[in-house]
Image (cartoon, rainbow, N blue to C red; front, top):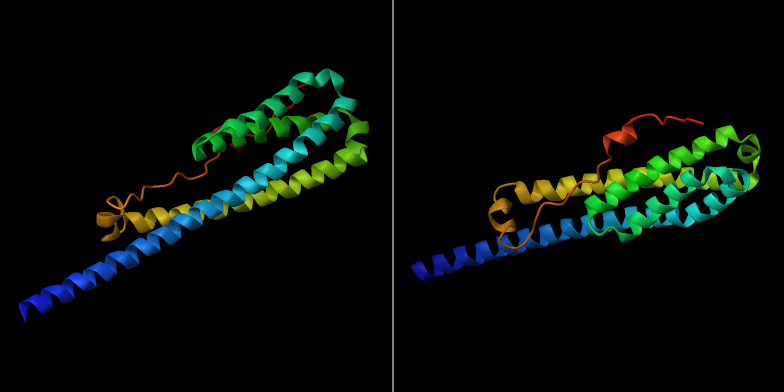
Length: 182
């Protein structure tokens, strides 16, 4: 009789651990999917950048420094490996793009150029999608991190290899308005 009771308790605990594990795997995959969505939008943004830079080059050839910074920031992202590195590279790129768009104010012909306007509109739409994807990613990370920290999952999550994920953060420089100097 005692053996049956112990066996039933072990089976119940086993089902509980399996259910907990499957829930954590599901949440972990949602985090990976949310990151992939950010990565997709950033790739789209990076594909637009060379076209934008080439358009600006024709109007503002002497602004080579700004254009090089945009390309360097784009390349930095390509070599980033962790979420933190990619977030930092994204922040750097966002700053350089702000400076690039500020150049348009100094060149009325550029500002009126159809190619530039189309690229700027496309990039603006992509930026909105990136912002939404970042928010979705952070919400998903928050759900996952909360799940692995809650009792009793916190007792088992570490043993099963589930670790806290990093949030996608913007740096303080991005919170400042762009300073345009000519």
